[in-house]
Image 1 (cartoon, rainbow, N blue to C red):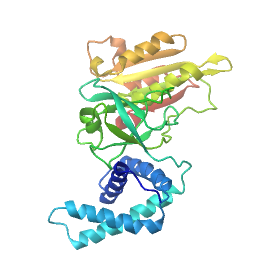
Image 2: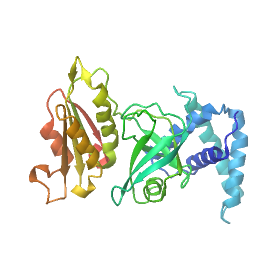
Image 3: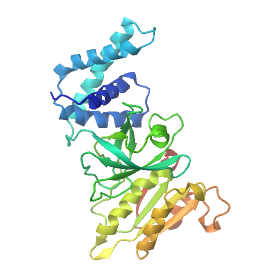
Image 4: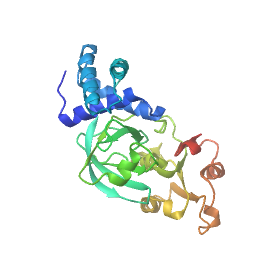
Length: 312
């Protein structure tokens, strides 16, 4: 068993505690386990370590618990703690990766709108990911709470990544990243996982990408990737990117989108669409799904990313 630096120990125990406490949604619990299991394996933890970890965590919670804390509650914590660690142990030994989470320093912060912030991060260890994959992310403002975010860029030579974060009211992570995280602070990034958006290496036809809100991030990463690797049989595959927003002001990444459209007009078509902005061109008014149906042609490979209402 390896010793963790103090800040990693805090994150590890807080993550276990968050799983024990429950109350998170399915995506949150999945992100927790996806971040926890590789670190568990990296540290060489085994079931015979569980008792020590559970005792330490229970004692820590008891010191800060309200007067309603009882021996019965403590026993429930111990029982759930063993269950969580056993679950983590099984997950850890099914992994194909042993990379633990890594700290990443915030080196850029752009409040693009009132609710959306673009963060540029420099991970301490280079992340090897495919455009379209997602990472579990946590912050010391809410250690132990993890959420999924997709890098908005293809892998860069300097290893930096860009995250697009929209503040979800009462969310455990996004308001911290959007409103409180500052340049110089660190966040923690788990290993990348497939989220159903990566490109199929056996498909070389045209792509139809549809993004709502910050669902733009993984699709923009795919477009960036194709600027250098998009040829098939000597021919550049055509890409249509539909970007949905409520108003023109909500199109938070418009400068980058304009830059891409200007640079690659021969194969890239970007079509913004707005649901609640009467001032834009009538041709640009409407919802994402209607625009997808208008642009879809047989043979298109379709990727959709965005809020649940769009995906469902």
